Structure formats: structure tokens, C-alpha cells
Image (cartoon, rainbow, N blue to C red; front, side, top):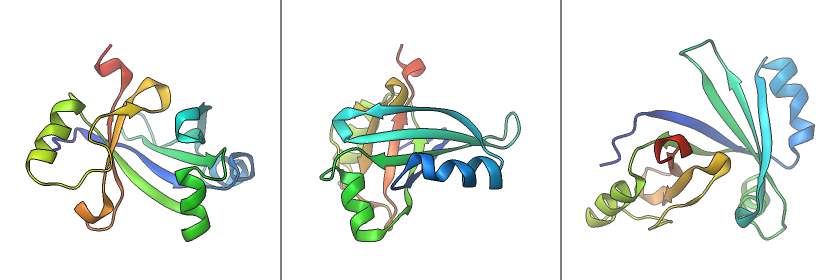
Length: 143
């Protein structure tokens, strides 16, 4: 069982982080939290926050940094748009072990490093009704 605590963020694939700022900041009124590169995934990410204290929603925009990165391939096949939903979990290793033991199809059997030092892992979309699902254990949860 995932035992999700909340939705951590919604991932959106984009060709250019800079080209999206006008929409997310100017049209939606989202607050820019910052950007960073996750080199082992070939992506640069920017986080935006919408909502009021206690009711925030985070959006993670993903820009490919390499032509052969998973995000570049996704955009080539599907165009820009929603990519995944990420759920906050604790003890991600146990969650992955339980899912694997239950026969749930995983992309990642062990966590990898995500943005902000989080541990992340993905379930295969076929295991979650066509939605790419990310498990995210924030760095402060295992610090």
C-alpha cells in the first residue's frame, strides 16, 4: 500500500521553463519557488505554488536538458502537458517493497534522487490506470 500523505506535486512536461513563466506567474498567479537541474534524469525543473497557506498546490515544470531524456521523449511523443502526479510518502523503500510484493508494476524498484534531495520512484502507468504515479519522500523526511 502506498499510504500517501498528500499530493506532493503535479508534473508538467514543457519545452522551455522560461517560455512558461508568463502563463504560470502572470495568468495563474503562481509563486515561483525556484529551479534546479536533476542531471541524472536529464531535466531542469521549476516549482510553482498556487493557493493559500495550508491549501497549496505545487506544480513541477520539467524541461529536458538532453534530447534522449525521458521528458524529451515524452514531449516528442505526446507534446507538452501533464506528465505525472506525485504523492508524498514516508519510508519509500518499504512502500516499493510492499508494492512489488503485491505484484504492482514498477518503473523503479529502488528510489532515485529527485529535486530538492527527495527520494523518488515511479509506478508504471499500466499499474495506475494510465496515470504515471510518482512516490516522493522529501529530504526532510529522512534527514
